[in-house]
Amino acid sequence: MVDPRRGIRSTLAQGRERLTGVARHRYPSVAVTGMTGVGKTELVDHLCGRPAPEGTPESGSAVMERRVRRGRRLRGFRFRVVPGENAATRLGALDEVFHDDPVDGVLHVVANGYATGRRTAGTTGPASVGREEQLARELEDWTVTSHRIASLAVRRPHPTWLVVVVTKVDLFADDVDEVVRSYSPGSGTPFGDRLDELRALAGAAKLSIDVLPACSHLDPGSTFPAARRDDYLEALEARMGQLAGHV
Image (cartoon, rainbow, N blue to C red; front, side, top):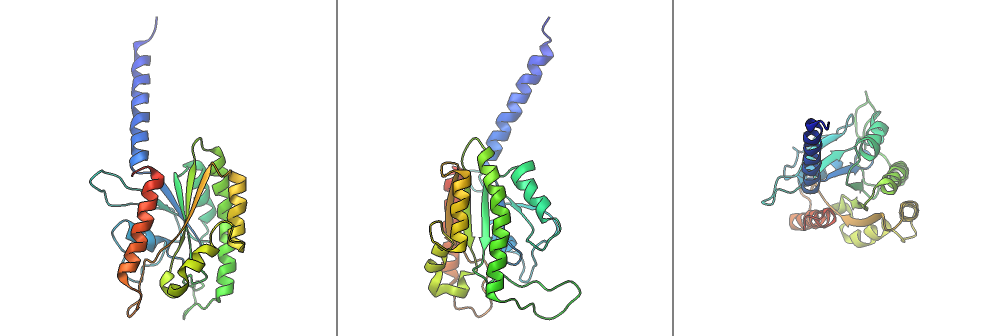
């Protein structure tokens, strides 16, 4: 005799799966990665429509989750911000977002060597780090992250998307296009070569790659137009919506 409760349990399980699928489509999860000081949390706060107070530091201890404000169509993103390279929990957080509870897309944030320096614990005064050292750290950070993205893309039954977000463009406003190209596949730069390697590992059909400029913070007295900053953020949001199938 067939247990009628089995059919009920099966129906309930299918209903939960459908609801989960709808939720993931409306609010896909996005890993936000990048080295310490590039402005990951600040970027997400702006995308969520709730900029953090000036001087708020990035978290260095755990994956943080934020959602964008809901639009009229009840769609947005669940952002999961991974600590930077100085955090003891970083590797565990990377495993979490790329393996244990895999995300739907990735924003990897870079700053063209202009990451905000972090002082060593117990010290005072400004943290001065040269651009060349910052760029080297940025590349090392990306190497660790890209291997996990490749593994994620290979395992997934459908394509994964990656957006490399070049932040702090107000600091090199006259060279934005050139800098964005330097972070793009096929550019021949060290970062571009790593992107080419990632695409080869994952397969071009399994991973889409975009590179977009952004600016989340303007220092007092900055001559960089706020309207231009907003245009960059709107373009990033629009592209994410396309990649997620929201539009």
